[in-house]
Image 1 (tube, rainbow, N blue to C red):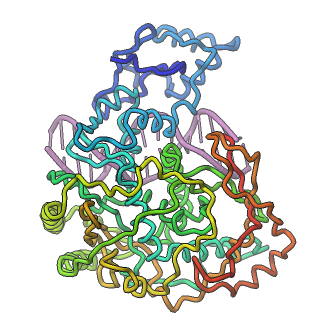
Image 2: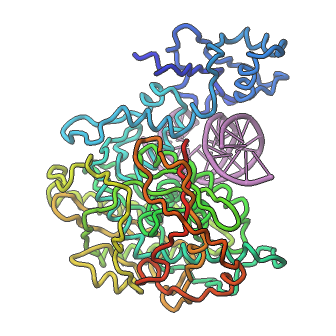
Image 3: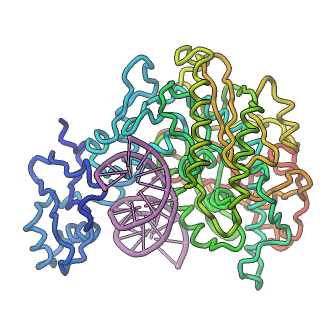
Length: 548
DNA sequence: AAATCCCGCCAAATG
DNA sequence: CATTTGGCGGGATTT
């Protein structure tokens, strides 16, 4: 049902992009829907002289409005019928963000757990009229926020925002334990330094301050917070492939949750997310790719109204960034460490890891049947067991109705938690269980159970080695100059969504400070997120609300 | 020119 | 082996 096209946007399936491959991801494509202007997709081509990519077709269609397209147009006409050229399809209309919006519109924020919140990939793809691939993108980040969970092969289960608060709470905590705040500062500083380094030493060297080798462990793991998803076998969850999107998304969110002005610039985020080997590898490309992903993630986060696009302006110019506009308060996280399981697993992984994971040679031992099998089964078993205790699905955390989660973006001076210099400290300080901190040794994928407080069911955090920063403490303070030097510009206060601009301090532009002086000055602010004063107020920030 | 980011190839992961 | 997932990056679009 549903003609597919919603609104007025003439979502014309201009020729299905399908390439030569006749069997690729095709599947549910060919929307036979399309009432009037149809045109299935010209199957053939290949040898054709026309390198017409779908894009060029679009371009062509657009140009059709102007007088000069002839032959090509003609050819196209033979295959398709045009939509009202008046409103030509633009890239915007095909954005992930919009797609995500459409997707979200199909489900309630707070679904009734007793109902069939099943999501069928094919249906969605078909109904939204998009390629499957795109749905995966959305699902992946939604999954990272536990708004959905894979229930079976082509299936996902919708959870909406029911678990969002809890998830964010965990992400924030984990982010704090990893001292992401500090890392960000460090990177900002580094970038800043490089900035007006009015000269030389380009190359790709890293700094003198390199942590280097960090063996492997390093408490800078990667993790993927997993949800108690029904006791289905589903499992899914692990696989070291769980790198990227899912994990990246969680990390990205974490960055927001631990940074004080809840603003994260793309480059900084990308740098941190790159983690792992940052040394001699081709950073350039890697960075670019990372940024692309970040945009993808950001788009859905934006659809979720969790972040907004802004710009931070430093002396050097504007940088794209995003600001958190989602919930600011979350339920406390509780959990318990499962040493036993944890350790056993850890050792296994270590073996594997040490066995063939040398920096350069990224032997994807992902393939190693035995190891993987083992790890998997263990995890599966564990998860199976986990879902048993406590009250299953029901008894939502109650707390606040998901809806009410959105408070004013205005972040008041609420010093977010005191900083712990060592994860251990923080851990100790934490009430009951709380997230487990995995000291060195354990490297890849270390499942940790986080028995959730009432009713929730346990959460598991999968840790995975990530990058440098072997010894957290003992690190020269990162300095926060970078932050200080930033300026958020507030452009046209109003925000499209009617929300009012969060904070937007006048900003005294930091221009008065000599860059060089600043640069050389680095030495202040010790801790990260809440060193009494120091960077506290970074009023010289100017945020550029992106009008969209 | 820089910022965005769509598109879809094609390799893992799965069944 | 067929499919399902989903890295990844070229290059088109927007800003």
